[in-house]
Length: 100
Image (cartoon, rainbow, N blue to C red; front, side):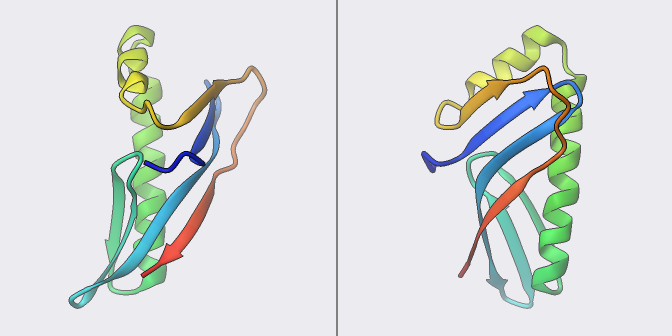
């Protein structure tokens, strides 16, 4: 897990920085965020990253649909990620990209 991964969460969204690896695997491209165990794939690098962003969006929507107690249990699994909570509206996300 990368110590530089960080997230700021509130009810309106997520802002953060996470390490992202993207590369070819056979005929397909795979893009993954290891610290969140979220990935995407496609027939090009662009499609793999777009799929990853889509899956990341679903991941966080599902997280915020959990009860507060269940969400706390899930967040504790992310021990290596710096997590903050904010009362401001936030909607940005940045992938630190590494292509292999």
